[in-house]
Image 1 (cartoon, helix red, strand yellow):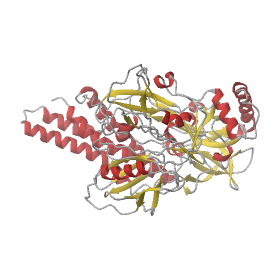
Image 2: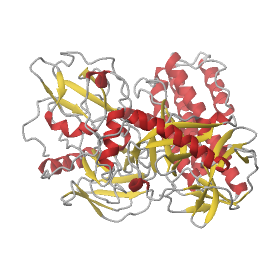
Image 3: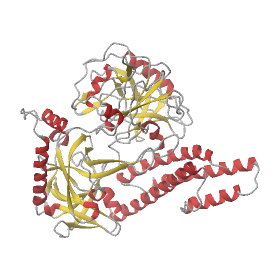
Image 4: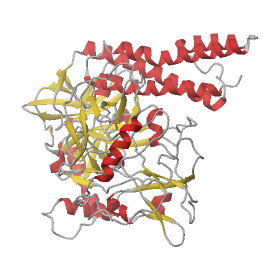
Length: 622
């Protein structure tokens, strides 16, 4: 399959990125990311809905949506409706979400493309099990300058060939930040107009080419250099250079996409998340298991068989399911062999959040645990146990032994009720560190084993994810929280950190306080936006309430215009400082990778909040 040579129609095209599924539970608004990721869908796509000079906003809501960067080119059919162009038929394996059209200028920064320009978009290519798309895109909006790209080669810039990001001016203005939406690593590049200079998580990763395809045709080079202090960067210069390089690059033979073909229907464009049908799941299973050359099996019958298999798994591993309970909550865990030992596995956030935790099997037997370790880069904790019983077996090489569409079951503690539940589903995504499933498990299942029905092996430790999104302009919630269900892969853990429980608990308390402050700051900024003022008595956090009282007291006096502006400036400055003080101070005290990654996410939230306060507080009614 080759990219069609026929020119596209002259219509502006926008690429949209959804947040990564391979990120920890995002409980809080990410204002910086919402700009790209949270555009409201509409109920339907009508004929002639797009007037001249429109911008097409496309949002991918499919099961692997967040592991792909998508772009759509639009052209017009004879009847005037807007359809996907033939150039995008290579995206047939992707489940499309709704398309919305707006007039230029109707929305702040909505016209990402240069007027009349056509963005160069390539269909996805397959490298092993990773689906990628090379796309360059102009973002001429203040605070979100830059380009979007994807490298189809394993280079340090993209870590594993499946990391996507956008360039955003750093808070301190010294370099541009490339936000990696897969692993949430912090990548930075300087913008000197000639080359991309980068470091990952503050460390040099050397020099690596940014390539367009497997032939390693270079379209840009990334080299490491420490950012210069007080150097202002204009990412648009780099963007134009790289965009020209992409436009001049040769488009090679495209690989066949691995997902089943799914033509976007009107319902896909108008409705909610599109999931694989039973027939598609069956076809995908057959495609990924060549030894089964028979016609696609009856999925409904298979699911019934899977339910029976799940019931048998409960009987077999009854005494290896563990209930985690404490004074403030509950969770799940399981016993499994790992290496040459026997261990109890659960989530790091369960171990950190459940105080005074005790462990019991389904039969009510207490589980005695010994030395514990936390996985680096994963939400997993293991604790040594005495061998015995029938422990679970961990699947080694999930990306080789399992496939999208395979049946799974989640076994665990139903909402902390102490009752085992079996939740059936299928694998809908496989990533380097996680698998995504459509089994609708609940918070009490955190730490449960996700079991591959066919092999009976554990493919991941269940993690419950809720993603909130807000409109970047109005700062109002766009929709109800999106629920996602993942499992951290044990087979991909590369390193473990021994746990000192006193230190672990202290660091957990530090992060708990930071997250509580973030929630209170979010509540404040939402209150100001919704009411135009600060609601009396709503904000009880002492650090916030005391400054609100002082500020309101000043505003109730007869101040001059200058004094009022000074009071507002001081209030905003304090809130911005409050957004950063505790997270900066926590760096020295956090030693566990799990909490360090949490802190990095909190820093991003706080930076976005600090920017948001500077904008939203301008709307306060005097």
